Image (cartoon, rainbow, N blue to C red; front, side):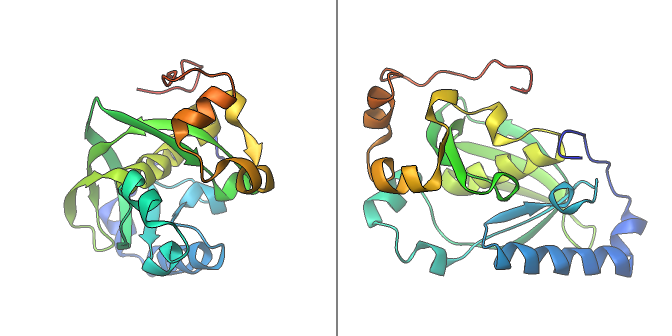
Length: 198
């Protein structure tokens, strides 16, 4: 299911009690993990539905300079139904990224620094968000899930590692130093594999 394109929901489906219950269950699952996003295919539902929340308490142990570098700020709970990226910046940023579906691992992933996303909220009302920094990264990651992509399809493959290795040796280093140490050079390399996407 993680490799399939999820199907769109109709407005009538959005209003169903079952759909609203699923949204609440996804929120609880995301918090329990803990994670900052969860897409319906990750829990066995092939639907264009994702939830996002990047809570302030997730950032309390992150160095201020790291938060600044990633442009990471709290994001309130958000439901994305039938989301699509309608604009993306040419400027990109590369950071370590992980996923609840590939627990225990991380890799460098290059993504657009800013995106504009159109979607329906949990009431079926159309919404449009312009996101930057870490929020833009979370949106791109979750929308990828709805289209059959995982971060490993976009990662710098030589940077793939377990979280223990990342925590012990790499997490506090600037990305340029990580790239140099891994023999990747100073400039990021775009992924051009079969699942690279647009």
